[in-house]
Every structure is written in C-alpha cells, then in structure tokens.
Image 1: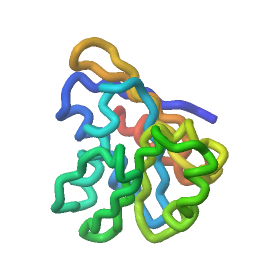
Image 2: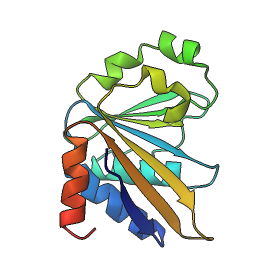
Image 3: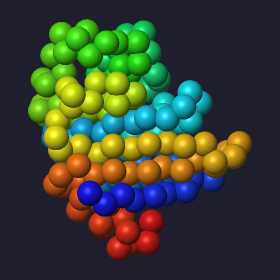
Length: 156
C-alpha cells in the first residue's frame, strides 16, 4: 500500500484537496478521517459536501451519528463514530451506506476499522502549526490506489 501526503496551509488548501478527490467519487466511495480534535475533519467533510453539491450546511454528526445529504448527483453520508463502540456501530447497518449509492465519509473511522470495507481511502489529518495540516492518504484497494497515483502524477 502506498501513501500520499498533502500539506494544507489554509482552509482553501483543504477545499482544494477535497475538490481533487471529489472528481473521482462514485457510488460506494468510502473515506475515513482520523486526527486529533480540531485537526480539520469537519472542515474537510464540509468541503466534500460542497463538492458533491450539497446545499445544506454540513456539520459534525457527533450526537446524531449519521447525517444524510443529497448532492447533485450522489448522496453524501457523513458519520461520526467517536462515541460508539464497534458493537453499537455494527447495529446501525453501516454496510447499507458503505455499499450503497452514495459517498460515505466516516470521522474517527479507526474506531470501527473491523466494520469498514476492505476498499476505502483512509485519511489521517495531523496538526502542523496553527493553520497547517498534513493529510496522509492511505489507499486500501482499487480504485483508491489509482486516485492517489493520479494526485501524484498531477503534482498535487
């Protein structure tokens, strides 16, 4: 498995990464986000929602666990599993989202790793200063390996 790193120096840089990735999205896309509190998981999720054409405000589903939005072409399923055990998460029927017709983004995905599909894009966000973030993309299977390869080829 190869990895890809992207340095974001601003919210606009984070939105740029989301825009580049969104060009690849299709039904069944699964992305996981992990990082410390305040690292930018929700900021990235909001940028993904905008790229999908979601008209509503995308905010963290910390207490609702799952928020469903309709994008222009694909549904967007935004999850925050921080407060769930793996057993509780399993009872939610996450497979219906993972293998459904939309894009699923799971904040704190490492907490339910055993429930995630084998093919997914894992993103770890690290703090690199007050406004800087390091996004480490770890592709698991196709097409995610190709996505990261194309980002590298394009110098992103």
